[in-house]
Each structure stands twice: as C-alpha cells, then as structure tokens.
Length: 133
Image 1 (cartoon, rainbow, N blue to C red):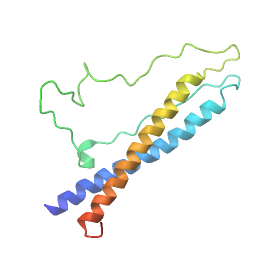
Image 2: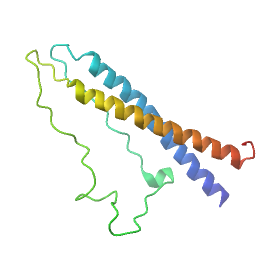
Image 3: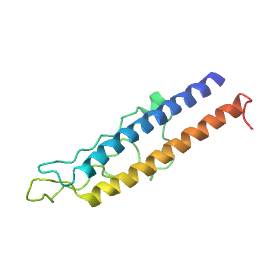
C-alpha cells in the first residue's frame, strides 16, 4: 500500500511539472502575441492545454453527488473555446491587447498555483521520509 501512495504522489508531481512547463511555454507565446500587436498581418496564437489522463496520473475526480460536474459531461461545465475574434485592424493584425493581457494574467496565476502545489508536495515528501521540519 505504501508503494501505491508513492505512485500517486509521483504521478501528481509529474502532472504538476508538465503543467508548469506548459504555462512557461504559453507565457512565451502570449508575450510574442503582445510584442507583435502592431505587426501587419499578425494573427495571435495560443497553446492547447496538455491532456493528462487522470487515472494515469493517479488522480481521479469523484462524483459523490448527482449535482457534481463530471469530466465526460457535455451539457454542463465551462466552455473553453473562447469568444470568436471580431477585431482585425486594417493592416490585418488580429491581436486584441486586452484579451492577451487577460490571458497573460491568468497564465501567471495558473503557474503560481502549480508551482505552489509542487512545492507543497515536495515538502510533504520530505516530511514522509523524515527529512522535513
């Protein structure tokens, strides 16, 4: 059983590390979008979030109430597609600085959360092996 706990924490730590790498890469892409806000014909790009199988990572959501959202639900939850872009300048540039800056702020917040969870997980592992506080 102790080995199962190690696998779960290892999978969770790998997922958090993957998430932090994604956030770093996305930050670079978003910064390029902002930097090219005045470039003629530039179209902003974004990265799709990494898909991690929760069962493979050792983490699964439990739907303990019929009112809870599920991962397979198609009629509830949040729409991650975003609103279509309608603003294009006469020179063909489609970067909306307000949208990009909101994405940058959200990305920074997501990275800080993943880094904090990763740090806490490392601290818990240190405590578990007797090297912590």
